[in-house]
Image 1 (cartoon, rainbow, N blue to C red):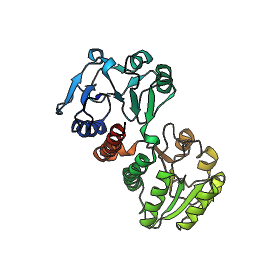
Image 2: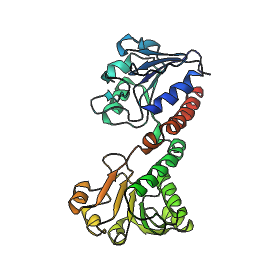
Image 3: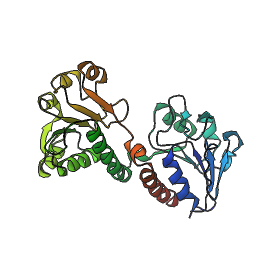
Length: 291
């Protein structure tokens, strides 16, 4: 239980609602900022304006998965209010206050450091990333079906990266009957790709691996699908870039060549926000209970 804890939940999308539902059952005091347009009510949670909160009593600040922009502004789907996180605001909290976010940027990281408050980036956790790979893969399959005129079965798929998402993507498209090649750098990943029955290649060789590709799925947050790579792809190929913004694709050149390239970070919150929210809520509740 979280009895006596004051948690401020600021902004976010439908995923935050699942977190509020979960935490409200644990007897915490919950203040919701940026939710005044939300019709639903939650037992034990109250809608507040940022200026009305006594931050000296706050134990936890929960930001959306997207964190803040470089101005410190928080995404508020359920509000027209502009909510801004500042160093001064964080300094008003209890000294052991923790700030939870999905991802961070230079601004938010700097604010937390200057305020001497712990910043926890949830999407960097293996458990959340692995759970999130499930709706990510389902969304990727959906996009592949929507944006091609061929079956996944017998298609030629190139997956770039063999981390937590790349592995799930490769396994799923292989199970659907595709011919899957996977690009990686580390020798341990090349070995695992081989063991799982996919065709491995070193990512430095991408340009030679895409001449007959139908779909390229990128999970590497680096500029790996360059103009040289795109120039060697068939004109009817599809690129689905799952890496965090700005992705790893030269989108300008893809458009120039007439190749459809889709940047699709954050698929869990788009295709399955309820499930994605429940994943975050489960892990977050355990983290808070563990102190």
